[in-house]
Image 1 (cartoon, rainbow, N blue to C red):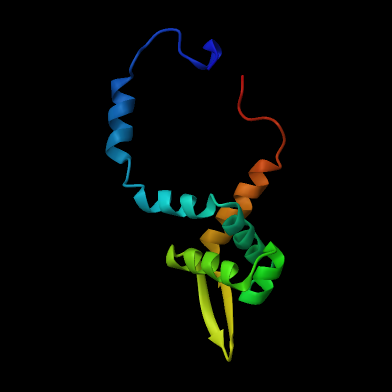
Image 2 (cartoon, rainbow, N blue to C red):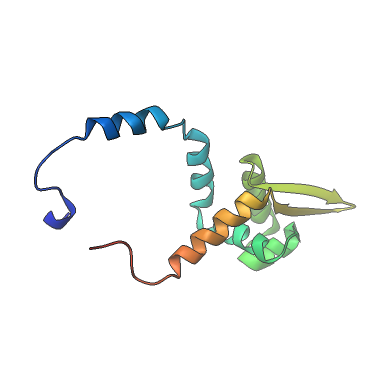
Length: 122
């Protein structure tokens, strides 16, 4: 870590710290969402479901270049973490993202990575 990333003196602004600590909710559920999306394959699946509203397990497997069993495992993980929903239609199982919040999270995360090199450095 370079010295430009550290304060040159230590001053704790107690009123700010207290205000934030009182307002800080339990973020455990949010942590689980980000952990679920931190896997390359699951994020690729979630992004695919922003491009196509609904996909069957076989199509997802083809997109990610895996077996149907592997795709099914990842889709089930997303479903179990409330990021995707599934429905059976005859012998096929189709998946969608759970809601617009998940769609926005995935899209915004991708858009953030394509905004350029300005990461708030001064």
